[in-house]
Each structure stands twice: as structure tokens, then as C-alpha cells.
Image: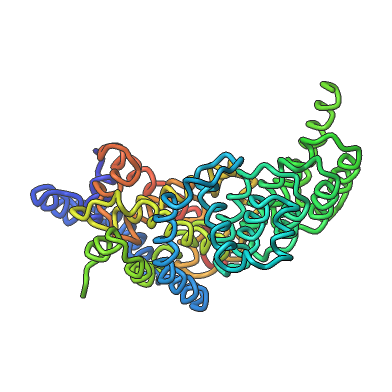
Amino acid sequence: MDIEERIIDYINNELSTEERQEVRRLIESDDMAKSLYEEYNDLMSGIQEEPLITPDQEWAASFSESLKNRKVEQRIEENEPKETKVVHLQSRSFITKIAVAAAILIIGILGYSNINQSNQIDEVGEEVYAMRQLLESNLNNSSVSSRIKAVRYSEDVDTQDEDFIRILEKTMREDESAHVRLAATEALKKWADVPFVQESLLMALQNEEDAHVKILLIETLSSIKDANVGPHLDNLINDVESPQYIKDEAHKGIFRLDKNAKIL
Amino acid sequence: MITDEELMLQAKSGDMSSISDLFVRYHKELYTFYYRQSKNDALSKDLVQNLFERIIKNRSKYDTKYPFKSWLFKLAWNEQNDFYRKRKLTLPGDERMAHILPQTESKREDASADSKQRLNVAMGQLNQEQQQLIQMTQFQGLKYAEVADIMGCSLSAIKVRVHRTMKSLRTAYINTPNHGY
């Protein structure tokens, strides 16, 4: 180990007593070692003196409150599997099955006697209806994590129900958090061949300002067979205001479209 | 005052309000941990929130014999790495990420400011792992052994990385222009 490394360990208090004494003697007797010590000490002190950054306290208070309330939610989640055994669902994930079953139970408790609601359930299927209710109520949650979680539930749902897909589509366009929009875009991938979803993805591509979401939109759109996608990607490439990395992604997207066209 | 470990014990027995207490205690440190690397407010908040979801999910796995803070930063580190891995991004050093994040700290005019700003500019030139190492060893004051546990590697490997990181930081600092640039 060279002297520079021993000085770093010395300042980080990672040496034994004997080693510390040895380095201390060296610093006192050797000008180069002393100069190195002073430089590293200044650097590390400078880093350690940096104050903590305080995020906005409204957010902190709101999330802290939601964690306190989690007590109830958590208990519900932990207890529900036992109560949902008799419900047969077609979606794939066990967690989703539990969530949907819970929603069905809640709907049942809150107002299954309501004739209109009952008719609606008959029309779309109680599973999809319950899932829609669950998704909608969770997407109204103020916590970003809860909204992402709600979107992720939907990834396990196999439905062509337009209302259900439209909830996700609206989230992809309108949610204030880029991370929720990103999750919704990801979830919409499997419905990307549905005309109104395609149209919405193209619209989002024009309006989206977050780079992560925009890149995912390019990837999603370039994986589907649609004649309208190419011109939209061309627009991005030709737009002088598009950052270079977006243009690069659009180029890759066009390459993928060409490749898909050749395969097809 | 009730310790972190005792709060986790309560959380393990189902009292979620103790997780809220831990959030109150640590949210600034965690937000700072993420923000100093990403310079992105929304992303840092999301990562903190996701981290607490992860704590709730993994609370039964926590062994109260070990310091909570090490375990917390292990999860924080995993959360951050998973986030970037899923999106195939690293920061900084990845050109795409460098474009995506606000670059206030790497602007040339910042380099002519005082030594603190010079230090920030130098820090901004380190790669993601190096920034994480600085965060853990300098800001959080974690020992090499704790960092080795968090990053899942040997103590000697961490020593080598810390040395390399500090040498890179010194070089970057020296090469960052001072007043009169």
C-alpha cells in the first residue's frame, strides 16, 4: 500500500493504533506526505461539511402520514388471501388475484344491492369491473409509489375492456409524476396495437417532456406495425429542438421499424 | 429515545407507524444520498418512497442484532441500482443520462466559484459507484466493512475502490479550474 492510500485510510480512521502512529510520524517528518495529508484532509472535510439537503416538507409530511395509515392497508393485505380462496380469476399474478378479489369483496360489501351497479358488473364481468375500480381508486392516491403499484397490478390483467385500458392511457398522458407515466407506458405496451392506444402513444410522443418516458414511447411505438409511427419519428429527428439523445433513439426506432417491415 | 433497531422490531410485529418514525429520522439523509448523485428532485423523492416500500416488504428479513443504518443503506443502494439497471442507465459517465439530468454542476462558469463549488464539480466527474462510495464513507460515515457488506464484496476490494475513488477525486479537483478561469 502506498503512502497516499495509507493517508486516505488514516483520515477515514481505518488503521490500527500502530499503523496510525506510523502514518502520523511520516506526516510530521516528510514534506510530501504532509502535503498529501493536507490536500486529502481538506477534500474530505469539505465533503463532510456539506449540509443535508432538505426536500419539500409538504411531500415529507404527506408520505410520512401515508406510512402511518399503511398499518390498516398492510393488515388487509396480510389477511386477504384466506378470504379470497373461492374467487376464480383469470389474471396471472397471485397478488393481482388477491387485489381483485379484495376489490370484489369491497364492492360487494359497499353496495352490491344497487341494481345499476349490478347490471354494469354483468356487462363487463365482475373481475374487470373490480379491477377497474381498484385501479381507479389507487390512481387517485397522492402517493407516487401507490400509483405505480396500481399501474403494475394492471400488467397482470388480461382484458380488452376499453374503459380499463383508457384509465391507463389517461394516466400515461396526464399523471403529474414522470415515474407513474413511465410505468403506465410500460403497462400499455401489450395494448399498443389497439387503435386508440396507438393514437394516444403518438400524441404523448409529441407532448411528453420527460426524457425517460419519451425514450420508452419511441421504443414502444417502433415495436408495433403502424404506418404512422415512421413520420412521427422523422419529425423528432428533424426537429431542431430535439436533444441529440432523443434523435439517436428515434434513429434506432426507425431502424427497428425497417427491420420489422423486412421480417414481415 | 427509542433506537432504530427497536423501531424495526415494532415494525416487524406489524406496527407500521414505526416505519413512519424511521422515515422522519432518515428521509433527509436518504434524499441527500440520491439527490447528490442525480441532481433530480422528483427522482430522489421517488427513490426514497420506493425504498420505504422495500423496507416494509423486507422488514421481516431484518436482523435487529445488526445496525439498522447499514441495512438501510444496503436497501438504498439496491433501490438505486435496480432503478438504473431497469432503465439501462448509469450516472454520470453515461452520455444519455448526462443529457437527461440537469447539468448545473458541470457548467464551466461554476468552475470559477469557490472551493466548495470546485469540489462539487470534481464530484460530478466521478462515476456512479465512486459517488456512492463517497456518499457512504464520507457523508454517512460508514466504515469500510459496512460498505463491503452493503455492496456485497470483500473488505479488501472496498479498500481498493475507496483508494481509487479518492485519488480520482483529488485529480479531478486539481484539474478543476480555480478563480480567474
